[in-house]
Length: 312
Figure: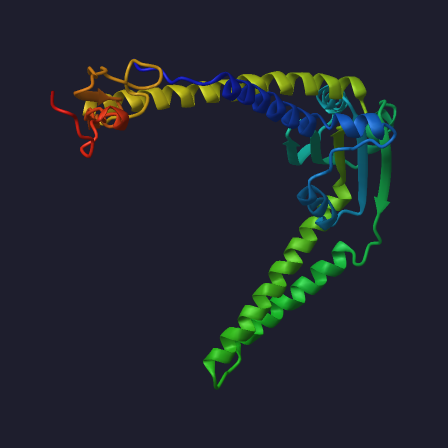
């Protein structure tokens, strides 16, 4: 197979580019410069926005928000699971993001939530534990009474005489929407009397640990160095393969011959007569003709035509 000749200067440039690219990737991923120059400011993985929105949207009379910040979120999750193991809870939401954050939303029975809350407060790495109680706007009895009234109004609409039937269907649809909303509110109220809603958020410290940043930097640098080198080698093989294919197809390339600098061919003979020269660049043949000029006679040696000699 044909080989591609690479000069020493190009090889040195490629090695420099590979090392620089690996360093840039390693610095970017490990954030080691930020760790060295600003070690007092740590970055904490953020909670998913959808979890916060969902937690706020649920209509529970009592809510508890736990926040843990730790370096090992898996171990902390196991500690929380051991506390909840003997509790009859319902998991509503659970999500893990890139091994940096674990968020759960659970329903705790109203009669056992205080015991669970006290045990969770004793765990290390607890950032805060917030207890939220909302004001009760309407009791379940009031909601059920209003639901009964809306159902009676719906039956009355069915029996009344309407000149425009389209108007009747519009009124019925409005009543259906109101009845459905009241039913959902009653269900949420019943849950709020039996359960307490709890959000448990476990976030990882992303920066601020010099040792961890150095470890990530070293691993990332080696991985980048290996992958970029493999990528360049694959590109080299592709170029060699294409060059070989061109040779098979009869397409001439600069690196298609066995010679490092191309095929120079043979040199023809040269003389004072005619010589053939073949330099190997497009097989161009050049003929040169050399003509030997006759020697000029010396003016001093020519006889003087005006000179007269005496005859003897």
